[in-house]
Image (cartoon, rainbow, N blue to C red; front, top):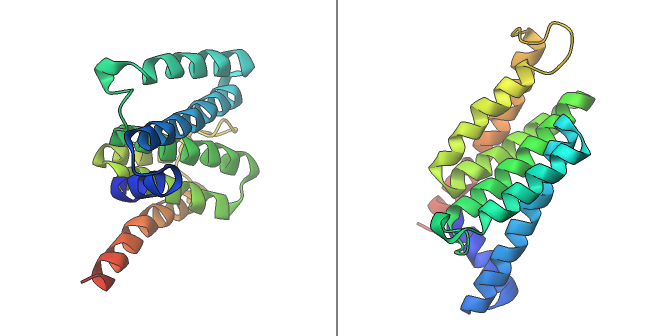
Length: 167
C-alpha cells in the first residue's frame, strides 16, 4: 500500500524530494482535518481543535520521523478517514457506510501492518455506540461488524489480484 501511495505522490508532485515533501504535507493536512472532525464529533468543537492542534504539532516532530514521508502517515490518513466514516455509519445506521469504513481501515493495514489495531477499535465502536443497551453484542452489531470486516478484506484481495495479474 505504501508503494502505491508513494507512486501517487510522485505522479502528482514530481519525482523530487520537494514533490515527496509536498505530498506529505497534503497527507498530513488531511489527517489533521480528520482528527479534528473525529474529535468534534465525539467531544465537541473545542476538543476537536485541541486534538487537531496537538496532532499537528506532534506529527511534524523529527524524532518520530514526522518530517519524513513515513508509512505511518499513510496509516493514520486511512485509519482516521475510516473511523470518521464509521462514526457516521453508526449515527445513520447505513450498511454501505460500514462496508466503506472497513475498506478504509483495511487500506490502513496495507500501508503498514500496525494498522490492524484500528479494526478491533472499529468493532468496539460499533458495539459501544452510545445507544440504550450499548455494550452488548447483538445480531445487528454482528451484521455491522461483518460488513466492516468484508470491506476490510477488499483492499487485500485487490492487491492479491493485481500481484497475480503481474505474475
